[in-house]
Image 1 (cartoon, rainbow, N blue to C red):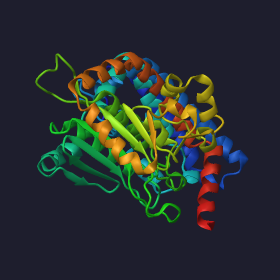
Image 2 (image 1 turned 120 degrees about the horizontal axis):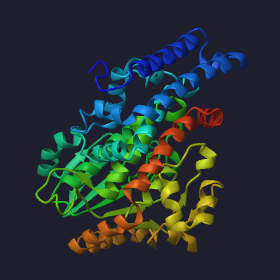
Image 3 (image 1 turned 180 degrees about the horizontal axis):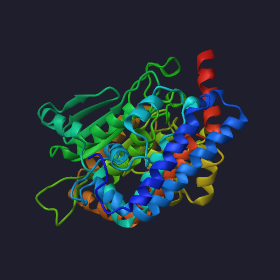
Image 4 (image 1 turned 30 degrees about the vertical axis):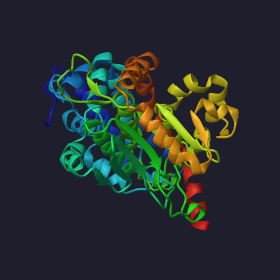
Length: 435
């Protein structure tokens, strides 16, 4: 597919292309972002914003036709990563090309032009459409090609080692262990890809009835020999320009986390009963669940923690939006506590009474293994499976999630390239080098 074939106004396509080309010309004549003075920054911002306004107007009028072109009239499910690249070829000027993204990927965050913001504009518009957005959400519930390739071997051996996650079937339980040993399970693009593969396999393997997520034993000097759940987004990777909007921030929410909630969408024998294959999930928190780690706890059916663990969601301190936590957190903790966590950076220790808003059971560290075994046994039940499905239906509708993610796609993209976030991750990276 090289050019659009749907019924799109040719004049609108020319306007879109010309606005994007003008912005590219203006930016190309300027020094790089890190070397620009105030006047150059203003020129670049004006040109980019004019192009983005043209993209916005184009999508307001043509978003459903754009999606139909990219999915052959919604006859195909297209993964979000393929979708944005195909859109660049089919609608020149709408989103950055693969070449532009590759050049941006080689730069630190502060040296990038912010091309991913245009991807955010597109994905936001698609999700705002009730028809295109619903189809895209279904596409992201499909198992990945990587998982489908690995499934026969995993079903045979019951073990899979990925760069950042180990998956092991023990009896009827799938044990997913995060093992980014040197970074306290800080999340990056690789972690998201590995987690989605592992989640897919746990859901696809019929021998698995229930699944557990836990952090592995760390090599980090401060926590050497101890388990840690998650320290959230890898800020060093963000500073280095290695955290992507599509393959990390959007894929994480639309992909493996939502699959934990809703299951994986596959063709099976009884689609009239359920479109997806779902399973109960348990999380066990050792050490801490910070940021993205805390976000994960909100979608699990039972959350256990050692008595010395804590949970925090320092979104305002990091400067970015904490995934779908702002959608789910109020349901768990109420509005006041949500604001204390997200806006004020409150840390909630497992021993505090309010920790029970996050955690179902708190035990002494030595007793966590036994608590995990009990939880997996109790949740391995067909009646549990049906009731978790109905609880999910009641708690989070597809439309509410879609509407939230439409806003998230745009505002998270803008946050990635905001001056305060770039400054914060730069200070974090410098502090890491000096320590």
